[in-house]
Image (cartoon, rainbow, N blue to C red; front, side):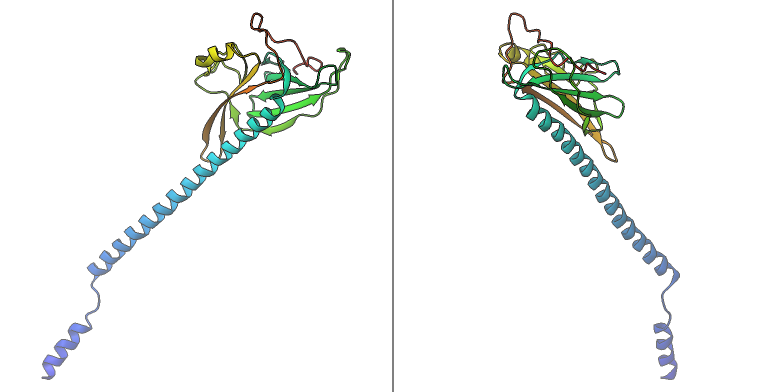
Length: 223
């Protein structure tokens, strides 16, 4: 009886073997690895979504501001490059025979900055008006890679960029249209969102036989 009792007692106190410890550690390690990988993936997805949201907000800010200003323009200049290498476009707003307001937008390739400034040209059409300081609308913008020859601003009906397939529609329009094409790239990891929009200057008049826009808002030039 005593011998049998001691045998059973010894079996119960044998403890956990080394193999069992190793197996348990391996299983625990696998579980921790799965959880860690899931957390890393969630954080990466969150950063990507934040970058995309930042791009959408930046693009929306540019388009909304430009649309608000250019939609009621009575004249839009031919976009071009300034002496500083930036891309410029100007448009004029205001009622006929009254004080006009000039708005000049520029895209600065270094840093991908989009800015604008305003001034009021003399009523007599001569002289130079003092322009306001540049207001920055956003940063992180670039030209669309597939169309490196296209500026960020182009003027309808001449369409040479990604909207070229719609040039027929612009040629039948009686108003000038400002076409805006750009990429917005922000965040870590960096994400890119493409924006293409056409803004119609509803108070402008385009002569279909001679669609060259008039020279307006030239008082301060293109630095």
